[in-house]
Length: 506
Ligand SMILES: NC(=O)c1ccc[n+]([C@@H]2O[C@H](COP(=O)([O-])OP(=O)(O)OC[C@H]3O[C@@H](n4cnc5c(N)ncnc54)[C@H](O)[C@@H]3O)[C@@H](O)[C@H]2O)c1
Image 1 (cartoon, helix red, strand yellow):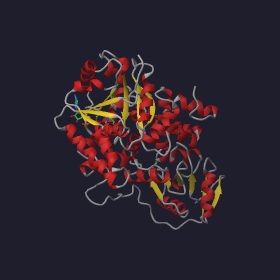
Image 2 (cartoon, helix red, strand yellow):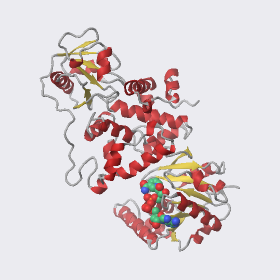
Image 3 (cartoon, protein in one colour):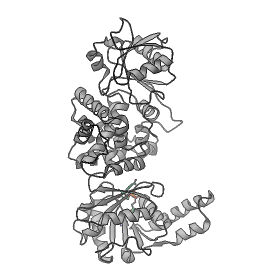
Image 4 (cartoon, helix red, strand yellow):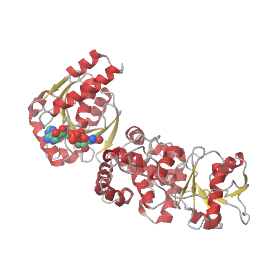
């Protein structure tokens, strides 16, 4: 049966007038579509429409919308007194409580009132579209339209076809998403779809770094913003979203992928959730919001040292770039060869910790400091010590690096530093999403850019860093940690070996 979501007289019914439903209804009404709104709680629809009206008043006051346009939008809303009022709708968007049994009951009830060619789309974040549709009379007409919070602001919509959805349903929902001014991406019905799946690297790996005492939350945030170009650090993001919400997503994806180590949730975050350290909404998370937000105490107290006259740098990936920066800062450098007895030795490993790099290169660990070359060295530099690095050697290395003009963050030993670890994990999870055919490579990147606000999607990020270098980081991390969560995907390994883009299809 044909799907008619492009008809000019299409009526949309939104069920659930909470945070998401009201925003979705606003988006539809603003796109010129007559929009019905229903909620099981008395008064909820009136509250929602009052809130939408107030928001639009703000737009009018700022000159972004005319008063007539606002009146037009509000006139397109029609509150529903009962579920039966959805009968005229060609598309129903469900945004009620995230509970499988309640959603299934609603879908079955809706089918009784809707015409046979109407479509029902769920806004679920964590349930299976196929599972919600199971038991319905017309599963072919059921799909997913996953909006992001707040819907009027967030451009992205994930379109999900269930296993029993009509083959044309996803295309129809894509066209509908464009009609209401959104950027759709198509995902298969898998845990977390694209965006919540792609987000399983940044926060969880950052939590592991902090749990291992490598760097403090504010140091990880600063590095990811200043050195890796992210708009928000992982801990700022956790505090904004709420540790409870993030923990629930982490646990759901981990469980639904049957304990895939890559998605292992954080035991430390669970304790924070239990203790009510949820973030901004409780006044305290990784930062304290009861007063002006302050950074915190650095993980390593670096002894103040005079800038050394010269340093030795390992002649490996990035070593030449580091030497050029230091030379420009007036520090003599020796690239490769045997270091002199008391020289400060700088190494630039990929995925290796400072300990392993010092031993592999037969350097004195006490004089060795590692520098992360994945980040932008001109914005902020990571200096990583090993357990034996002498305080004066670390101080001298930091003084030399600071002479370039970039601020320096000193961290404890970690295979993959902070930036390499987080970027490599983001790329690896992105390639897993591609490998599992959750979405087309281009859609994976669009999802992460628009849904997670990343500067680049995971596959584009991997291409920019170089797939073989990302692979080297992951292999190095796995070699040191012996932890299967760092194993590279076949998608990444194959493309790195062939020397092609991570967007290359099979
Ligand atoms: N909040 C987010 O960031 C976000 C983002 C994307 C998707 N989602 C999904 O959107 C859905 C709604 O989330 P929300 O944050 O808007 O929740 P919410 O609690 O703000 O709103 C849910 C609304 O649904 C109503 N409701 C509950 N059961 C109902 C029923 N049987 N029939 C009609 N109305 C019913 C409630 O009264 C409430 O007003 C969930 O499936 C959620 O997973 C949420």
